Length: 81
Image (cartoon, rainbow, N blue to C red; front, side):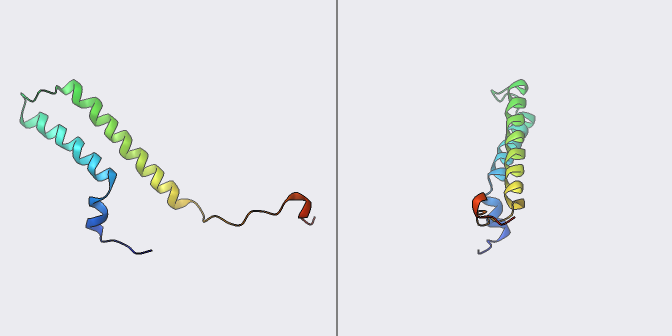
C-alpha cells in the first residue's frame, strides 16, 4: 500500500470538508449578519456536521483496530478434542 502525502490525504478527507463547511457557516454568520440564514438555523447544521465528523472518525478508527481476517475455523465435527 502506498502512502499519499499528508496534504493530499487532508484534501481528500470527508472530515476536513465537513469541518470546512461548518466553519464557513459560522464565519459567514459572524461577519455578515444580514446573511439569510439565522443563528437558530446554523446551529443544527453545525451539530449535524460535528456528528458526521465524529461518526466518520470512529468508523475509521474501528476499521484500523480490527485484526486482519483469518481462515475460518474448521467445522466442529473436524476438531480434535
